[in-house]
Structures are given as C-alpha cells and as structure tokens.
Image 1: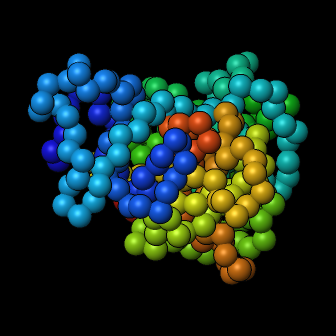
Image 2 (image 1 turned 90 degrees about the horizontal axis):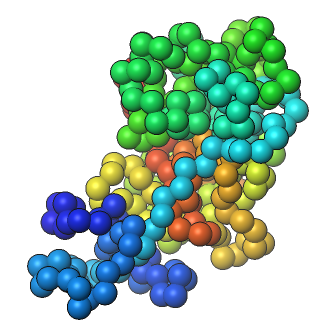
Length: 292
C-alpha cells in the first residue's frame, strides 16, 4: 500500500475526518503517525496528498496505549462471566491486570477471551506455545490461591490481533453472560465486519475500570485486517471511553435486540478519548483454525 512504509506511519485507515480532535461527518483516508512533522522539514515525496480518489486525507497523531490494569484487584465473582478482572500466572504478585471479555462454548471447549498482552505481555508467540499453553494458570483476582485458578492458557492466540484464550476449568461455575448486559454469549453471535459501519454502528462494553461505556465505530484500518477505532457515542452520557484495565473487554452491538452480538475485542486507546480493537469475526476465524 502506498505510504505504508513511509517513516513514522503506524496505520492507515478509512474513517471520519477529525478537526480539533472532534470527528466530522466527512469520510476520509487517515494517516496515523506517532509524531507529526512540520511541512518545511519534509521532502516533497514525504508529503501526503490532500486527496486520494474521492476521499480527502487526514493526518492524526496517535500514541497507542495497551490497557492492562495496574490497580488493586476486584473480589472473586462466581459464577464467572465476561466483564471481570483477570490476570495470568506469570503476573502473580504484580498489578498487571485486564478484562475477561466473554465466555463461550466452542467445539466442546469453554473458552474465555481476552487480549494477548493481558496474559503474555510482549512474550513472543513461540515462547507462549512452549511455556504457557496448557501450563500457565489464569486467575480472576489476587484472593485466588494457586488451587483456585479459573483455567489455563489455551492454544488459540494471536499477537497481531492481540487476542488470547483461556480454557475455563469445568469445576468453575460460569454463565455465558457479560457483566451488566442482558442476553447470552451461547450460542455465540458475531457482528459481521461488513455490518460495522463507520459513523453509524453503535457499540457498548463492560470494562473493569470504566464500567459500561458507549461508543460509535469511527474508522477501519486499511493496513491491519479487522482493526477498528471507536469514539464516544455523542448521544450517550459523557464518560471515559477507556482506561487501563479495560483491555480484553468485548464491544457488543448497542441496539434494542435481546441477543448479544460481539463486535470488537477492545485493546486500548490510540488517542485520548478513543478506543481501538479487532473485529470478533477475524478473531473467531483464527480461533476456529487453532482450537481443533
């Protein structure tokens, strides 16, 4: 893709043009940089065009932040459900925390879903396969002694889309629900990517720190498959969209349906007041390929 390899470019997506950090109604191709550079310091071939085809362009400075929690843990909750705090065995004694997004039954496995970085940090995938899968325990709060784990690290994971799975111990009571929301995640219902409309699709999540928050799909990456950005729903009460500890939460479609339709697995924030993550459709396809 043109400009993808240009120094400083982190991502390129299609989303709502932003003016003074506020989204407009204009759809644009957005170049996301860690740091903007003044035009007089750029060579001619480094300057982004003002328009590509029918779309205007936008340049956004971002600072992607992963959101594992660094606070005191919550109480143990049973039956287990989505929207609760979890951490991996390797983080016993630390304050590295995240959110269990949801629980569902897949091919006879009761799986919990969260972010890769919540369970493994920056450990590479080969190390995860050798040292963690089927071996390392996952806990729901610091009050859990080693014999009270909720499950073990499961073989379906992917660093690129930042997801990881936990095989829930059959002895642990669980319900296929997400904390604070009606409806069930069994059977699992996925919102197709083509139904996640930029500027139109409303979503909501249950995170450990922010609680229930409401968002609007704001952009879709042209570089990373299934990656979406989310801004606060302008029609919802004003509240923080995302804070550290929300990593792994499940964004679900916010409509009048009684069914839980999983949309995006929350990863973190790119800019203050926004969120990003990867579509459940992409993640579930990967899980299906690695869970049999």
